[in-house]
Image (cartoon, rainbow, N blue to C red; front, side, top):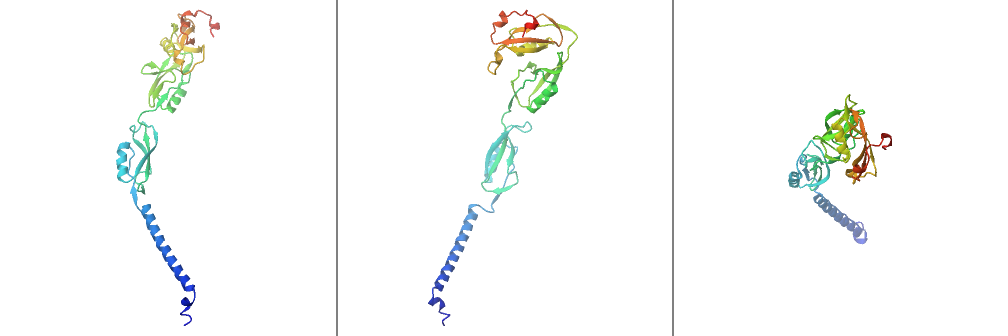
Length: 273
């Protein structure tokens, strides 16, 4: 009888009952928490990622939103192999299974071609010039040969028959024509008058006579802002001199156009520079 009344005679019964109730309440709370977390994280609810590469953003967004997914453009690139403005890469990839509301990261092909500044290729070997153009995303559509002081060096860069100055911006993927020297010719030609011409005009005029620009001396510092303002005011040899095809003509340039009129162009070659 004493054993049966143990729980009534002492506080042990109360303590045990309290512990049982505490355990029961903890279990109930744990179950509720797990159910809530399962619902909050949508555990087990997944969506299949649709394929959106090759589509425009306007086409991809409805497909992703229909699956409860979001889109974010994280980068752009340029490729001539796919239409401009289309998606070239997606993360996660198509057919992946992700949680509802997941962000799909997209890389898009640029909507316009990148503009590339033309490097200075003059007096560079044509093989080196080709390699440099290829690295910049430009191509060589043709090579023309002209007499020159030195063989296999680039004399001029042309596009659609017009000479291009270094720094001219071209669309990536464009092609140019390289004018390359093959050495001196066997005939003599008269040196044209270059005074008042820009460097690019002087080079084109000399090339039309099978001559090339040699040294180009500027009477002040050349910058991107004033480069196009320079004109030839002195040349050596002087206009009318007979030279062998492929020979070079040295020039001096200035932004002071009056020099082209006032400078005596009959100075000796050794005092030219």
